[in-house]
Length: 363
Image 1 (cartoon, helix red, strand yellow):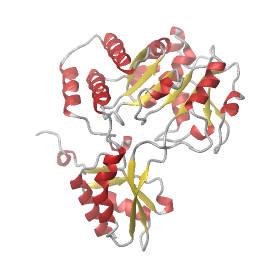
Image 2 (cartoon, one colour):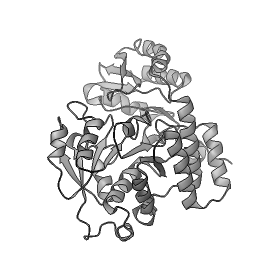
Image 3 (spheres, one colour):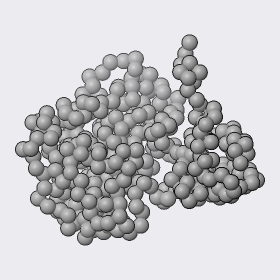
Image 4 (cartoon, helix red, strand yellow):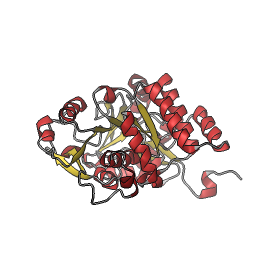
């Protein structure tokens, strides 16, 4: 008997929360599954597989080099370790050695967020020490610059909807500071859709999630300067060993990047058009008021924002949506304001109808 929901005692999930790790992030295409199967059915010299897929992706992305890792989080930890160790084999074997004191990683305070784990946990796993720059509501180039010391190993910039958006310096401004002081700039762009702009803005290393915008298997991608990428590969002898990625996902992700560059993501205008009947149906339900809103970080992503009024709170509605089979997961970030958001990128019309029917039952 093949694997299914019933065999494992699992509920089916309608993912209206977006590309979220807690739900398995995204679906992969038949093309990607074929590449994964090729990887699963063959053997490779794994060190060469990493180098050659990196070189292939680097050519596609017009960068010096690239390395596929197990996740964007692994990309943060290994990038930090790489820049601290600077290619030293002793460091790879002893990542937390007291012989190296240049471990400070400067991070805008409003970027030190919890995205499922705190950013600082990944920095510390890589052997770095977070030094916060600026304030929770403001960080400019001067705030970043004043925190630089002889112990600064890198600057880390988190490009995410989780971070504070207002009064924050841009990637280009952070790159200007980094270059002036000859300090590497790492940009974590895990869920971002543009695979070119942050390198073009001056970042030395850029990290992407494989399973989010690119809809690949569980993976991460680090692109940038060849020397730094080689230092990241060296971490396979150290902390990277616990973060290794299998051959099937390496090849599946490589295919996903190639396909993504050809087809791209669903356009915001298409999302809005698909949502119009959904929004209209939600507005027919007593106690709900729905409208289309754009992603808070300014990406070309549009969602249904639903204001809950009446006897039940938004938090109660969210929990009731999860209770039955299929479980409906939504974006919960504004629940304290009485708002539930529905991300339809991974939701088809049939599933939208199921969501509407469930909400009618709940309300």
